[in-house]
Image (cartoon, rainbow, N blue to C red):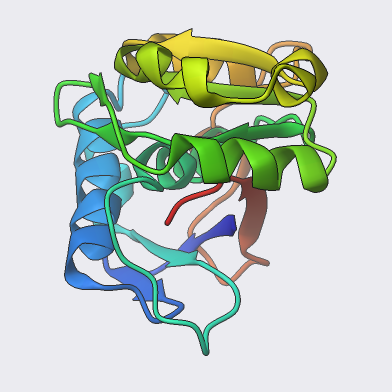
Length: 191
């Protein structure tokens, strides 16, 4: 499952599409609240979010989706959109996010890692508390994936973003006149 985030001039709205259930919508809101609370760390002013609309979309809109597993996927897409820092295209992830940036365990790890393997994902980020679930993963699958365990958002960020030259915060590059939206797409598997 992929997650996309687009930001553009607006009134501070969060738009969620892709037939997201209540729990998945709450995960998107938690991701946004986390990023807002860390605005300074991302080079953004607090009012940035009052004049920017954020649209998070999970493709395959005809298929209903729910659960907390895509929390870190939506978070990474959102951080990438507001910082314009590119994400690695061969990283998959799953995990619930808290408002304080902790990564909580989720279910269905075996099926998610099998799907990642089939999709050609090279690195997969799991909640550290899901480490026990790795015992039920076939050796062939485990050896084909660089599995990273994360307890917090800082670790998720470390595993997901392309190392580039210093990234200039979005606010200093884009005025809030009508401009093209910034759109990013990240790979995450949830269910």
